[in-house]
Image (tube, rainbow, N blue to C red; front, top):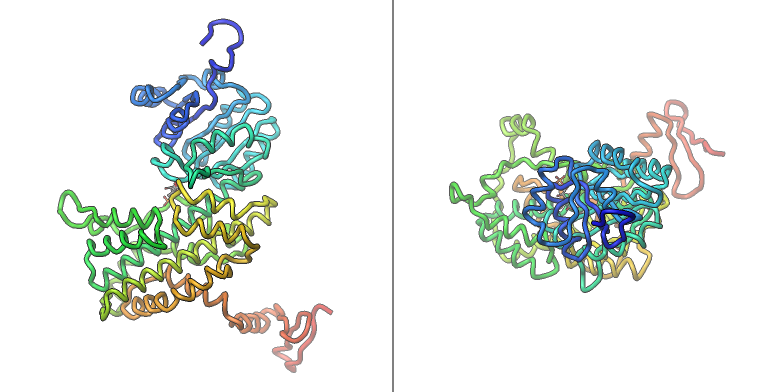
Length: 486
Ligand code: 6PG
């Protein structure tokens, strides 16, 4: 660096990363590997030093011990990506950074933030004339290093200044970057939240498929083979691929399949729960995602499971198999169909959220950037993005090619649920997906009776199929009908 006078921009870093835990340091290394000059800062200098010691030779890094020096080491407008634990940690970094920054500088939060926090932070920072960008980043540690899917949202002006750099470090699908401007304020984090909700559902379906095959007597190695095989067809996806790998793993201590040694309680950090909470607020049915969240809660509810195992009777989880190939094909169909339903639900939530908050999100573009880099990347997503680009869909399920394939899959899907249910194997995800499918196509839902009951006990009124208006029956009187909105 020059020792006097203003530094010329070649002396300055083009992007800075705050937070040198694995995601932050991997993202910084990704920028450096693409030729960017990268400033580094971490709360503790020892960690920054460790990153420099291990990876300093990979590119042009500018590490600072003090936040002031980090800020001074960046060209303007400054581009600063915060990769710290979501929540209070992010607010603390923003608070320290704000007085050091100047008009037009950009702060990006790359963590799994609650989009409500992102909206608040954007409004607060706009008052300081700073751009705040909430960017969903998916792909785990490996993705951060080699190419994640990036979902940035915030004031549109930031995109020309930062977007091309993010596109460069993102994963690419057939040459197209898996990064695009999502929309204003919380849009990026909202989309990432729903991505994670779909991830929860996807994993729950996979777990149910495994459980059904296990109950049918297949060995863990055979189930791993089935997933490997499925990954070569329509189900081709990262999660299906890694399922075959995880099922193949033996426990180094006992030699048993590792999956048999892992405690059967699934944990969660919160993004799936937020997806469901927000869906409830928005009135969007996402029952597959809700069941996936609840399945994790159920697995961790030790008191319930202990009491249930002691007190509750039922079938013994054994599925008698007449035709193993048929069962495998049915389970494959159930997995595929349920997965499509989860995408349909997640995309419905994104569309509704976009309308509610005026984000103008392009669903096809969102699905496009999920085709590579992210955890839910799947072959199917290319087709889904094309379907949304080609027509204005109320639901993914109505796209003619999707509806036709769901029709072909439904016999197997229903059979799997029937077999599992009869044998006492819980399949909440598969069942929720099918209930949604059947509800969506049902010409006459029993909601009519619910309305009748609501009118009985609370005079909540009902609408008629044959006339406009709202009505109420004098239930405790002469049972006549009155129009209540006239
Ligand atoms: C991703 C992942 C990532 C993380 C999840 C796990 O897209 O890269 O979704 O964000 O692994 O937060 O979430 P749970 O701990 O809640 O399962």
